[in-house]
Length: 612
Image 1: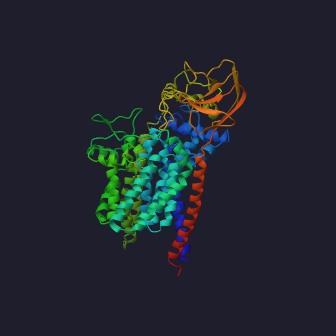
Image 2: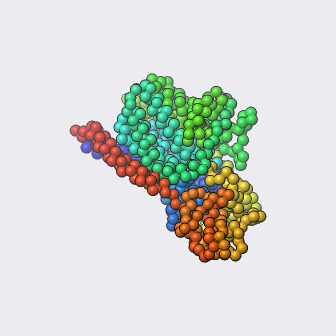
Image 3: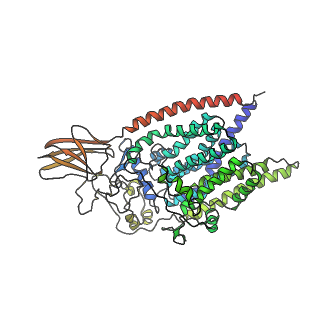
């Protein structure tokens, strides 16, 4: 009977957190969701909508797996690109609601996911309901992610996986088998296109494990972390291994240079300044340095800070948690002088040498800061007062405190979203009519003249991104953090030397006819009177393949095919062989992970108190 009551209580707790998380997330994101009919937001949103659009059209129009993105900067890998979300829940929303609304609804989903994940962290620590609610509010609605949404980096919504990954990691400290579940949620961060959170979480876990191991000297802590990382690799292999095809061309090494002077004023602005958004150019000068808000800013308000200080005083003997928290803060401070040597050392490590903004570690510091605050609230909440009215008043005041924190964080969010508004439109919209691929979103979404009025054509021109599904070739402004080529060799329609999407190097006595085109495949019927080279207006990579006895070559960065004289059918396609090995490893991860989780559940059931 006791077991049934416990199960029912847990189920009710999860359901209530889903409902409250959905309501709070909707209120918090309400101004942001009002833009769910437009892709024309400021800054880097054009990049995110390009990725969602390319994924969407490949799956829904061409019914193919999105191996290749031919629409941007002359082509690049789509699925294997670090900023691809093909195997993320976001893809389901994009398929159901389209590339615009789907992205907005994905943001809402991940906010709710993160909120609900905090419920399980509260269960692990045996906090009161209100204390767990406090952590969920603080972690989910801190301004750091909203700052990135303003920037146009929607991949930061994958922070919703962090609480689940951390919860199962905590359980893995006692039963290493739970490391498989921790690895699954950690892998989802990478599959959801955020390599920054993915890699920073590894540092966070290693820091947390080392902090506790120093105090307890318990190898089970290390075992749990090791199992998590092994399963992270297995679950993510389906994308990690194909990603090596891009990594061998572009390692994206970013030397750590952005070091700011350490000033109390900046730390105060990070956590206590609600105005953490900027206009089209973000500049807050500190000497000759720009305090770039998305990297540094994370408004949480004064109450969580005070609760954190109280928690530190009360639990200063919990050295493992204290060291991990202070270590997380030091990693944030490593973006500033005096502490920059910390990140300089980490930046020398392969893979981590792609990370140049250690201030982004603030999201993990706030998680631990919130844990201290939740411990304080839970302790107060569990104090029994003989007078029932005073006891009731205490609980009401605690709920009021949590609601105040939520309202305060929401107010900061609304200040940020006030700056989302697109510019008014001007004449001279860019229209593309070449056969390569066009998709007019005005027609697709039947936008009214009034809606079009709010779009700024000149702004879109400056980003060369009006028609997100056109091959822009030599764009002036194409945001791709890992392009295939350091210099763009593909030409765009309108360029003086643009020769089309397919042409012979020597076009005398030649003809060609496009038989089929999709993002992954090109089929051409060609005739040439002598041996020739057929050029495709796409970036070359060795993962381009061809049917028949033809030779593919890298012609000054372009995709070239040696064609003997005569009449031929050229069938080109992109396929990455590494995906087969990666899929095999991922399947192994699911099989082993399921086996371990079943055993972990059985052990937990055996160790739980009997019904008697």
